[in-house]
Image 1: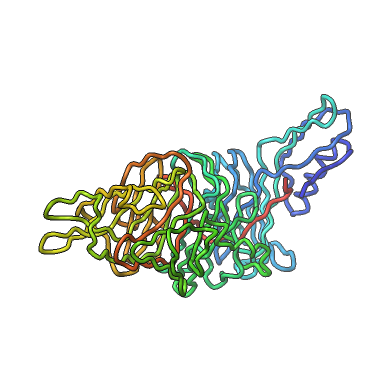
Image 2 (image 1 turned 90 degrees about the horizontal axis):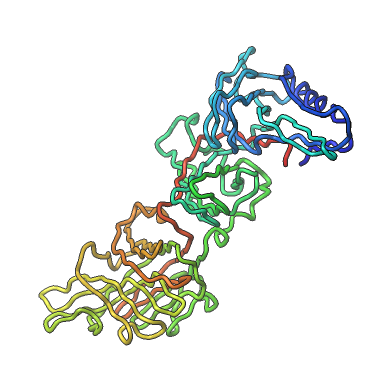
Length: 492
């Protein structure tokens, strides 16, 4: 929404700002508008902030504010809380920043509450932000108008916001990055200290917005309001190198204006939950079986994606690794007394020329016991890995867990291909919770694809596969306490 004053005498800009604040019941602060005394043109009032959040305690004696934009020292802030009849319940007209307030930072304030009102009486809040900075507009020829930036934030107590600050740590500007957001209040019984109001939030009344109040694509991995745990994935369209963005988890809103933004397939680069086998998504060396949401790979079967994912990505999957059957893999470091047998293999990077850099998993035979083995497997698709490849197998630790459902993760970053496994837990997206199994340096010759296979034995089973963008270190996430959402006007 634009507050533009078309073809008015320039001095009317002063009156408009004064009326705006007077309407709110404030003593009019000092507002400076520097204008030349002649000319007619257009000028707009600009808010120094687009979005924010406000919280106040039960007794209306103190509260907190969070803004989506940096605010400079000298900024004046006015807070007013009203009941449903428009009566002023509590206020603070004396807040002035002495230093810069960074976006996403918490500003604590006190409240005057002359009648002893409580939070349950508050229906809406107004927050006025008056910046010492100016917006300059050329209105006609050499006529310049400098107007102090002024914003009015409006909030009601039915729309909640949990501010989430996402910080880029790798030194790369990121695009369409899938960020995992975990909110865990399971150990917190005091509602004043919750990150969400778990009595209000549900899967139908929530959505995410960026610091310009634009909706973001998201997916709810878990939302357990009884135990107060939630896991979300949000697609962040743009995250500047070494910078940060503040997103808002909005909830308590019905009807939900952005329900369609809950879309798993627009959060990640690639998703397959194997309801069917999709030949548009996968190539295969033979016909494979998908039943009841499970992809089955027997010995001699492998599949790989048609889509490529760039040169920096992470792959997550739910997998049940089946043993090899003892068949000798000839192109391995075998000896006269011992040999290796390959079972499942994970193709972490498939080059444009179809060279597959993989983790081979199997066993070593020839002693008293069969020992688990692993190692880098490199071959060219779609051929048999033992016809044109080499498996650099060994019995080095750690070894993979077989014959049970586990999570596997593969990351490719700056030519470093790393494989991970974990056997328990719900947080499959947090790589720090995994055990690193192997790490290989690979030659990157272009955008990569991924794949999975079983050379002998099996079967191995796969429940789902997800691919997302990846950098190291990943962005960090800081979740604030729940607030009521503030929307600021004018909207630019």
